[in-house]
Image (cartoon, rainbow, N blue to C red; front, top):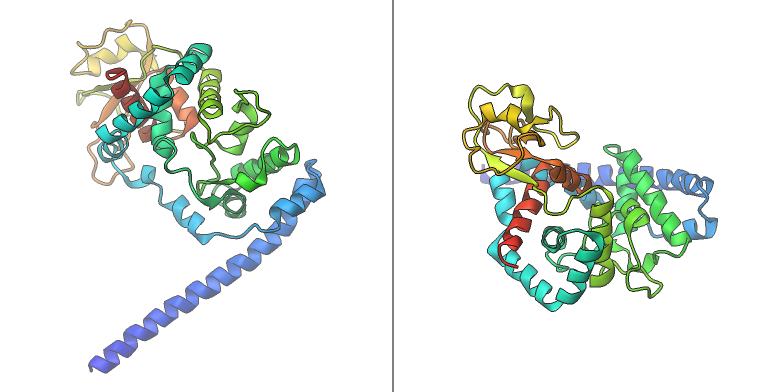
Length: 337
């Protein structure tokens, strides 16, 4: 009986292995066909055939990238857990250590771009833990895999085309392109389109070095400034909501913050508004990041009044929790620097 059970289990395992093997084989064959079409598209978009062939010759389908894409922390961690992991005292200590070492450069960049050093430290800390986790994935293969995949095909195809153009124009070298599974690169995890639009050769050495302090901090500051960040303005306030608030005012998606109103409109739905020293006419909205995402979550908790700066962080990364974590860490630095 025990022998029969073992054989049955072995047969099931063998079946799954065969299914996985054939699925991967089929995916790789389809990927090769996609690759041929993409190369033609790249040339049509003005990228030299030499660059296309040279860069894409080693592009591979990475099944692990698809796994990472489907299982992002923003999809399954509640806000309390997500923020706690990314704003720890250890994270603050590491950020303060970096600031102490690079204080002169960081202060100069803060003044030039009118972006708080605390925000820059928070962004770098959450993106790469101050350069410790830059990513080791082959970005060309990562972007190729995600371009081949159907979930966000158009977005990642555009990013890959931009990256090839940057290589073709010798703005970026293909030899340094190792980063995140999503194709992001450097201390602040810039996507190719972000590199194209906002990256700077701040130290004027004829290279954009996004793994170095000067260029990466200046590029991040330039980016957040250009998308409209307002220095010394609030990002959010955590609030308690009364049960009579209409559900239509609760934002649960990072795609677009809706139902913005003046603060004085929302005050009747708040339990704890007495500590907010804000103009009652300031435009705000309410975010409840766990609703509709975390199974069994409380509809009204946690809740945040968010302002214009919060939306600017969303432009950096379309995640309600990411924006809350960044602004929380920024506030922790503000109390320490």
